[in-house]
Length: 178
Ligand code: NI
Image 1 (tube, rainbow, N blue to C red):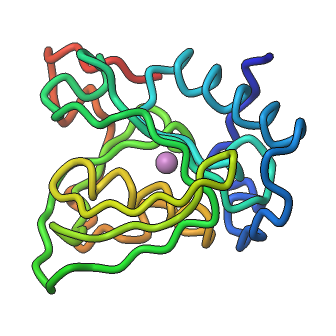
Image 2 (cartoon, protein in one colour; image 1 turned 180 degrees about the horizontal axis):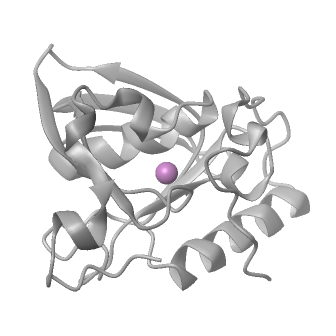
Image 3 (tube, protein in one colour; image 1 turned 180 degrees about the vertical axis):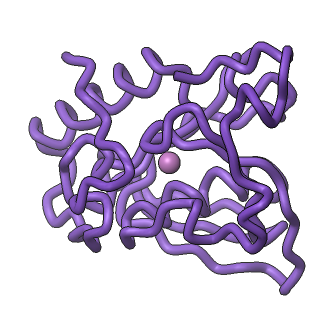
């Protein structure tokens, strides 16, 4: 499989609303997921949405291993493939925290997200997934599903003073970012 170029903010394809996947368990879908995983891993991303590699389909992957240099303090999120996802906030509580995005390289912003939510969808074989999650796991899911609706995290920032280059916001912390 292949590492694919990641579209960057400004590319109008990132603003499209993606289409649901209609055929599960297909070779095309498996190939797309393999490319997404290779691409995300090569860039130490915590998640990736299909439209970020130019495929306007409602497919996201996310997960963090034991140590992710982009998010060294984040809790471990299991590797997850989520197709045709739906999010349901649990409660109204929002939490602000720093986010980055492989489509907005070298930058971070303070973004409000629901603290707790339930997500539903299917995996690549059509098995249903339903999880109630919180914290960083909930944040990553919201960030990735936003990509499917053409929303990039800077559009969610409430105070644009809390948006900038990673090296300036967090000097000397060596947060890997490209
Ligand atoms: Ni992103």
